[in-house]
Amino acid sequence: MYPNLKLQLWKTGIRQNRLARMLEMDETVLSKIVNGFREPNPDLRGKIATLLQCDPLWLFERVDGTPPAAPSSDVATAHNS
Image (tube, rainbow, N blue to C red; front, side, top):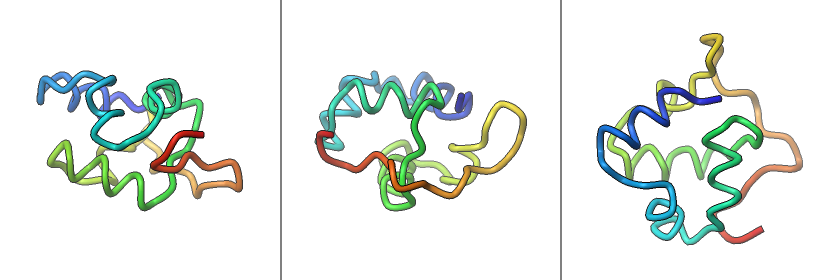
């Protein structure tokens, strides 16, 4: 789970469905990213951080404090999957 991502969404007042539209991606994929079930690639992390106006390393820090894992071959992209 990415608690900082959830916090920043709340602070900015941007709902997940709106952010998904802004990123031109499926809401389900974004939900899986927000809840830590999918790893976004570095490009997508940057886009999300830019839209939410914050540092991507902080934004994608996991609950246990570890930085984001390196994306695998099953990485979410900015478009519908």
